[in-house]
Image (cartoon, rainbow, N blue to C red):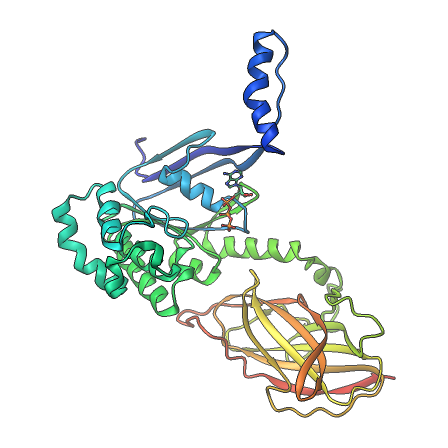
Length: 430
Ligand SMILES: Nc1ncnc2c1ncn2[C@@H]1O[C@H](COP(=O)(O)OP(=O)(O)OP(=O)(O)O)[C@@H](O)[C@H]1O
């Protein structure tokens, strides 16, 4: 290990895979190059190189918690596996200092044929604990995992949640210097997740370095000292969690076509910000009612994309009605930037009875209070009608804009309670 105090040093690391189009190409690659070499012919390849990680460098200090964020396939799991030594880098160097306990892919490290008890002993032994040390901790592990008599059943009979419970319980009881957690916690129920996060806090106080892969930007900001953003195998950003989350969120929104929102706004314009509608449901005139535009504004109708904690956000919607709609119904949904639905409501759920709408263009408004944790939220809009007592959606815009809520110390995190108010449609033109 180098002279600096880091417990993890990742230096210019790359991981490449050989990709073969077919088993035949793999066989050819095995045989033909050898023959060509014997015959003195130039080399020939039957594969392409896939770079799962390229030139990634960062260090982690003792006691530091680093979050890793990135879209599916960006290389997060590969990076963790390289750090844990279950994969070897193609290029570059990784050094770690201390005992690493890891929760990698679901149940990895557990043998499905062995019982939970046998697996705990096996895992702890691999990490260097003697039988007496494991005996002394076994009851604590069992209490934390809370899987009862299943401990003496083969792991293959466990639910995925039970596997994670036991794996996490084992990992935190082996006195790790480094804990690596790859999204495994997302599998457990909410109460267990909280228990794990509390335990992560304890480990942080004890000076354990933690690497946490998560899709939860809230968890990242709340638990990590710093964050790393991976994109297509490269490290895009390494720094303050809020800055990294913002860069990640911006990137996601851009990828989803969100730049259209900003392009449609005149900088000095005090007209509502107009989102260019993405036609999700391929709506056409045959659709009875469809969204034309959506604008996010403050209560004075000024364009708004940042809201104070517990502020007011207005979502102004224009819809085109193509035929008479006897019982219209409107919906709104808030999601996290990574597409997790957080809250939704329809006028039907709110008990709002809307008048029949004749053909024409209408404006209506949702007014939401934002006592939400500091984060970015994506708005989706749905419109439709009630048929046989049920909401039938005619058109949905899954990206109708986004807004950031400014975080406030001690504002907490959790379920959204937007206290929606619906302002009934008014005709703009017929
Ligand atoms: N053994 C392998 N052979 C070829 N490609 C691989 C192999 N393992 C991983 N990859 C590829 O490497 C890339 C990175 O995968 P990785 O699992 O690290 O991504 P990730 O960020 O953890 O994704 P997710 O969020 O979906 O878990 C992916 O494109 C994946 O298909």
